Image 1: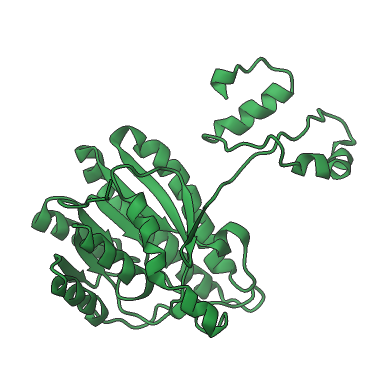
Image 2: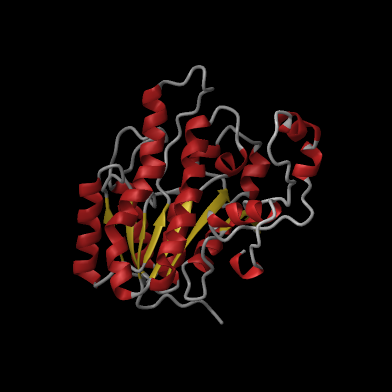
Amino acid sequence: MKIDLSGKVAVVTGAGGGLGRQHALLLARRGAKVVVNDLGGAVDGRGGSVSAAQAVVAEIEAAGGIAVANGASVTDFEQVAAMMAETESRWGSVDILVANAGILRDRTFAKLELEDFRAVVDVHLMGSVHCVKAVWDGMRARNYGRIVFTTSSSGLFGNFGQSNYGAAKAALVGLMNTLALEGAKYNIKVNCLAPTAATRMMEGVIPQDQLDALDPSLVSPAVLAMVSDGAPSKTVICAGAGSFEISQITLTQGAHFGAGDDVGEKILAHLAQLQDASGQFVPGDALFQSKHELAKAGFNIGTEDM
């Protein structure tokens, strides 16, 4: 069944170009009213202009869609709250949030200034937190919400020279995991997108022919799926060049060594066993780890508790 977003209201941050622009265009094409939010700054977050967001709004309107531009900085909660309140006043609700705004200040950790670490965390992590905080109560009250955070392979797997960016992106997965649990009974689905796309942030990183294959528009269908009525929750979808994967944090079966002065040595001696992926699983929440460990220690933990 074709995904239809008619009647839904979406806010897409960082939507003045690149991935955010494609997300906004696709959601509008599927019937959503879209707030195109973009500070309009440089890749490192400095500067700002609402003209980029206005240009995307013009594209949406030219195609018959409905959209408005907004230049709020996601790092300023008052601006974000005002944007969401204005959206609810205009269109009645915020049903969909795609937190896409981001900046880069890449350096090896030895050369990285703490100011640049904080700035990246402030935009990616706290910017997403600000947006969710401003819509969470409304989504709970309406028993409906779709939230997509933008994580990254740099956060999931690490990337040289991106300790600040990787830390912020990994933190969003942790935020997703908890909000998905807390929002479940209110029909709020919370997911993460890990995109690979040719954007300003990728220029000069990989060869041009590979960049050409990484059209940002090929990523946006993953967002469409994650904001639909049939969306999953607590899921990290990786997307690039028309391919899609799921990234999961798993727990291996491991081993029980008990107490003793030589447990540290046993861990090193049995690393291969601890790393063995056979029988690994995806815990439902934080308690699963403790239950798994207690069961191996001999406690009677029923399968219904796991």
